[in-house]
Amino acid sequence: MTAQVIERTPSRTPAEIRRARRLGIIYFVLAVLVVWAFAIGTEGDSIFRLGQRPGDLDVTVPAGGFAYLTAAVFAFLGAVQFVRGMGRWGNVVLAVALGMFVIAFLAWAAAGQSFSLSGMLKTSVSNAAPIAFGALSGVMCERVAVINIGIEGMLLTGAFVGAVVGSLLGGWMGLVAATLAGGILASGLAVLAIRYRVDQIVAGVVVNIFALGLTSFLSASFLVDNPDMNQPPIFVAWNVPLLSDIPILGPLLFQHNVFVYALYVLTALFAYALFRTRWGLRSRAVGEHPKAADTLGVNVFKFRYVNVMLGGMIAGFGGAFFTLGSVGSFNENMTGGRGFIGLAAMIFGRWHPVGALAAALVFGFADSLQVKLGILSTGIPSEFLLMAPYLTTIVVVAGLVGRSRPPAADGQPYVKQ
Image 1 (spheres, rainbow, N blue to C red):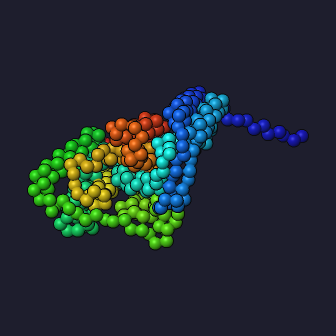
Image 2 (spheres, rainbow, N blue to C red):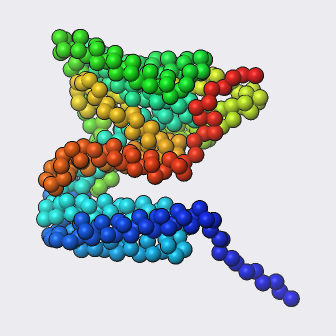
Image 3 (cartoon, rainbow, N blue to C red):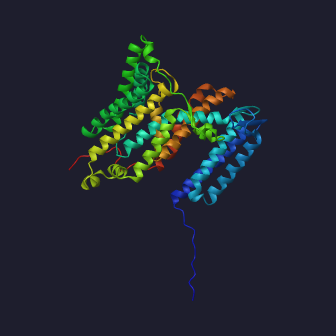
């Protein structure tokens, strides 16, 4: 007799069924929204320029037709979600669907016009750099169970020190000084959180208030009267030979300044170090179960101090982007909450360096989108356009934080027995 193997479709849990139905409702709502807002009454074609010059790699999209297509796809996905769900492909399908929604929105905004999509994407990468540095800083700290709310203050301090030292000693010295300033500020956070076991949220808020107050005071007291101390050189973009000539990807990835290239290197380096080296294994052990790590001979306090200071140096380096890589001078509170958006990117990226970079690119795209929409004169109030990066932060955190698992000991002080 031959045994028959009966394959059974894995049954879904009630929680999975509820989530699938909620997502199905969202798809249906998006379908109605796309038809109402982007399809009805929309005429003309939108020309997306993917090349560096007009007429070079242009893509023409019928604004109204693509909106109807997007709505049909959303309605189909909503029906599938209600009937059986997407299974393990759900997140991939959701990402593709949201991408179609963004294209439909851009096609509606640019109906009858043309705009440089490659230029907007290039700006997105540049705008994402300080957010990504903040996210990497958060990853390094929280992987050893120290919550770093003070990233905003470290970015701001790095921007100020980079501007002053860069004006006096040159851009490279300003970059080094900004990195060290972030590390010094992080060492204060580490002492409060690790040695004295101060509530880590409170300690981070103290760092932010201290950095904002100090830089604002010094800016008003010294930089206003000494403008020559607030004129640092800017690191200009450098085209990577050969790679910068690749169509679409060349301008997008390989025509930036030193900050973006350093971001690529640091992301790859820390992704490898955290998950492929002994140091990374011990760091993650300290964040997941510090008592067990201590029992095995790992110096929990040492790893926490080192990682927090390393995270602060990354944030200080990223803060220098504002003055040495973008604006060319320091302004009070010029970071504009990018440190907090970096924390959201860290959560969105599930405490992984590569995921944090990818999430930062989403926020960078939202930042560049509000500038592009202002140029296209869509009729959307400018106040709402300025809210775009922060609304994206709220939506991402509210929708994903519940499904992201931080290190088990995150935020918990360790007391050696």
